Image (cartoon, rainbow, N blue to C red; front, top):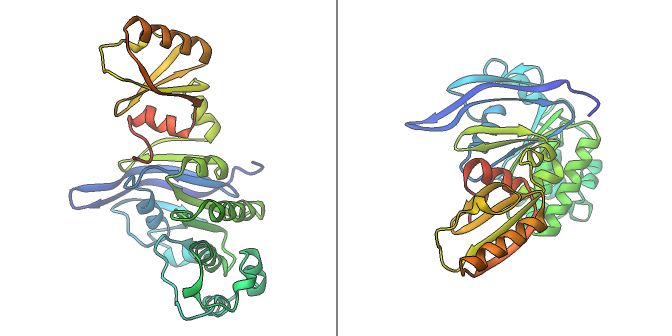
Length: 308
């Protein structure tokens, strides 16, 4: 990126609900003009972090500077420079797309051209349609349009593609990347690893309220020090020492599935098959693939990002 100027700086954010700590001392910064992802499973603390940054929840400890303003001391000024799309955006169902955008625009001293915004969000054919008749993808694009109506510097998107079909997801990805091209800073939460890999310049991985890794997608995967992953099960869980298999750099597991990380796929497969033959075990559901952000998460936590 051309600029490494910090536009968000998070310092020791903590949020508790009784004895439960939803966010436990998060610290990170976001560079101006980047797409920054908070990646993790449901319940990791992503949405709570975002809600504190936009003023919907008050931190129990710590603070953050957003667009040059302190979220605990200058929240009114923060709200002038941010736009927010939440998972549970409630819209006036009987208004048309055009009507609600002009309504939201009237809340600000200045707003951008509504017809241009409708066009940017691919809603031109629906501008006179009532909101209740829109598809899920169209409603999400409208929610993003509402977040952009006052031309904010920073856009917060909370799981923007959850529940959408693949085509609608790809359409939103294109819109998010166009926002970046225009110099906007985008902070998004997601539990989709492919989404994070495609969209994000840098990713903060969260789990159980803690930030456990932060880097570019490529560097996070590279730090596994393995190009490939081999997944398999044995038909009978015998006592097998997987570390004896050739060229294995790391070993993971998910329930009864074993995962071997390797830079020499052929050597590892040959050795694995030989070991199974020697122990008279049958390999089940054997598959190979390129290492991904999912593997980073499995390696760090022992669990998948999305269970099931």
